[in-house]
Image 1: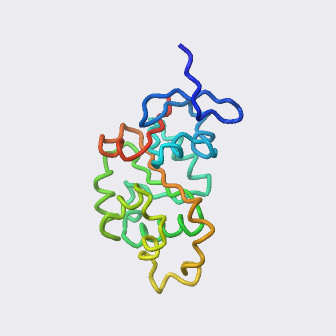
Image 2: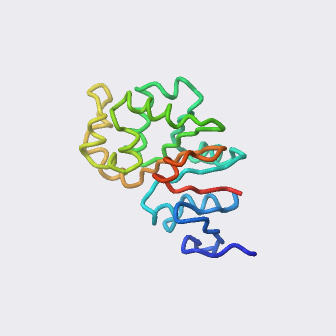
Amino acid sequence: MPPKKSAASTEKDVPVEKSSDLGVSIKFSDFSNELLCNEASYKKSGRWPVVLDPTGNAATFLKYRDAILLNARTPNDLVPNTIRRAVLAGLRYGKPLVLDLEDSDLFDVCVTKFDEVQKGLMDDILSKEIMKNEKYLSLVKDTDGPEFKADCFLSEVNNFLFVITTKIAPPSPLRIKTFVIEIN
């Protein structure tokens, strides 16, 4: 049976198979449109995307799209100051912040590491509360420099995108808080 066309189809009329109200199943060739177009399904859901891609190609694609990449298996990527600066840079410059879990169930470890930056930081990111002035400005330190002053964020915060990539099925609590894009 051919995949159904959903409202997430782009101008090219790319078919997107609806898997549930929590996500979509797509071909890798449709990934760029599904993630980056204005009509992306995850945008309509109000949740950030988790990309389930057993090949790891999605993480590689995002790495070369000028995204900020934190790899859950790289200890230096999960140092509190690295996380804090990555979140701030994503918000300040309107860039995607990608948390790559690879083929490990390390999401809870990442939550703990994000909490070392600020209690509840991952929840603030997943709920999009981090995009509010008082939330992201609480991460700024005097030593961050003039490019991170409050008025420098205004034009780019709405372009911020948080993406989690994984090669294995995300745990149920994460699936509920995010929009799963499954690449088949």
